[in-house]
Image (cartoon, rainbow, N blue to C red; front, side, top):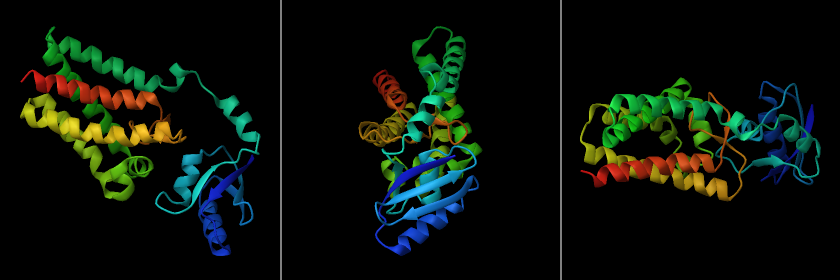
Amino acid sequence: MTHTYTVEGITCEGCVAKVKSKLLMHPDVLSADVKLEGQKATVTMQKHISVPALQEAIGVNTKYTISQDASDHSHHTMNEATAKSWIATYKPLLIIGLFITGVSAIASGGSLHLGMSYFMAGFFLVFSFFKLLDVKGFASSYAMYDLLAINVPAYGYIYPFIELGLGLAYLTGFNPFFTNVATIVVMGFSSMGVIKSVLNKQKIRCACLGAVFNLPMSTVTIIEDLLMVGMATAMLAQL
């Protein structure tokens, strides 16, 4: 299959050669034709490659930005053919959420405060687990929208361990004041990048479940982050 893309940031033949070389390094790209005029890239691939994956191939922290070309109607055909229902798209997230909620309700014995604490522990432990399965893949995706990771790529490698630490803190009841404040700061700041990406209608992958599942960035991600901020605030108010 062949698709045409717009590549912003191409200003000379050197840029053309660099972008073409980067695209050809992707294992699923069969050929790539990049033109300075119109800043276009025609890519032939053995299987469909998402725009975020192509951007990652070119480089996340570069001046080159690749996006779908509005004149290439094959993109719309592909999008329609692969479109999923909301439930099908977020099935992994929904199952994980229901699982954590159920376990937390059983373990808390009816205590709302304890139930929220167990939910927070389960949330951070499970989500950090998926991120740790492919830390590099997560860091690359996270650097596409998180405000700190964009400027400090190393933060993407540290973040899964921050979530792991918060999960263990909620599970063991370690210093509830510090744990809740840290959650508000971390998740609140993280939500800023998510909100910005959603408002800008960026079609990028959400890194909430690491690089294991290909979940799109949407208002669901905002709700997920702000839910944790809200629960941490409520627990902090009860101390």
